[in-house]
Image (tube, rainbow, N blue to C red):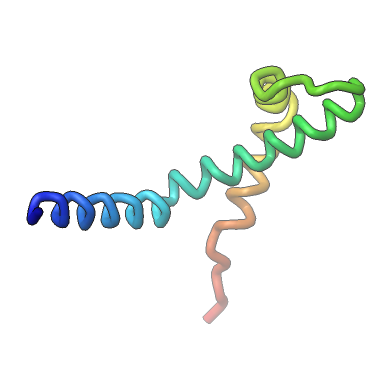
Length: 81
């Protein structure tokens, strides 16, 4: 019984670490952009284009600009002293 409680505590710690991780947050933000792209392109096509096609299309057409914009938006602003 003690081992189960320890494992549950460890899993909770791991989940908290994952959700607070910058890498995980970036993954979720990028995934959200791909899903938006999938919706838009599927509407244009008149049918679901699928996640893989949307992902590849988004990477080729939009990823580098999205990342550059994201870096600019998340960069701390310098205050003049």
